[in-house]
Length: 70
Image (cartoon, rainbow, N blue to C red; front, side, top):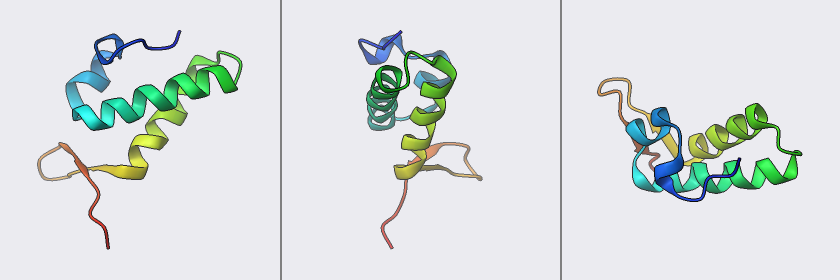
């Protein structure tokens, strides 16, 4: 089931990720959903991997933050 809007995302995504990361998650999930024949678990894994390319969880605060360019 592709996500039509950010408000459709799972609670764990909406409650923990900043808006831009949610947008990445939604786009990656929807793309993987189509590409991998509607395999929900796989689409979620692809979406999290896409988020982790640009964001990382701050161990001190527990918040997701955009990665700094080196």
